[in-house]
Length: 257
Image 1 (tube, rainbow, N blue to C red):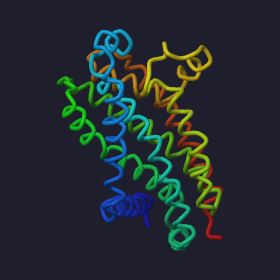
Image 2 (cartoon, rainbow, N blue to C red):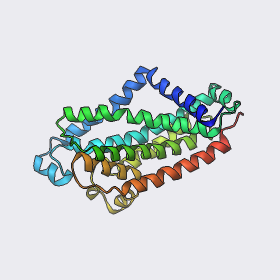
Image 3 (spheres, helix red, strand yellow):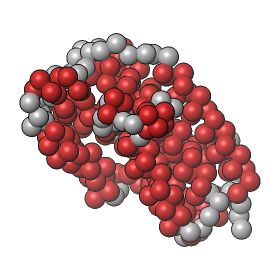
Image 4 (spheres, rainbow, N blue to C red):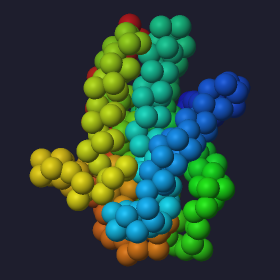
């Protein structure tokens, strides 16, 4: 079995699992839309002059949209990590590991499966934002850059959470780690608010938080503001470093026993 063939077969399994679980697929779409409807609409009640002053737009949903898609890539990474724990507990992982399939194929199938699931939200979220009055610009190159940023962000966080899960057969561990990290990562980025709202120590974290970089690229596209394409290089380094760690953990801890 070639490494590419093993990866393709395992990756298809991840995609098939998404579509064979309609409730889980529905929640993938519903959860971020709920954020837009309730959280976004709550701040949209501010006077328009304050919205423009603080958020650079008269529609806060346009401001939060890129941040919500970025944080979705963070949260979806948690699900991919939990799935490998269940594969281990139900014996599927053991069946794969006794074949010639390389450990790297198992790792990348999980990571790219999570990224694919995250990207499925993009058209739904864009349509939801448009329904709430967000005017989306026709910037094809900008959208490609934004999608690349989301892919790199998803690769990075999925690799991190998968690295944790591969070392344990306890299905609760990935969820515990996510509970500790996800909300701080979200609130110390610019996903929900600009850095000018934060104290100095939170701004320092936001300046190195990968979610901030992906959010700012998307926000530049949505709000037609200048965006720094060099932020993509930072996300590429983050994704490469996280993936490298994940591969090392896979080779060490993905064992039959």
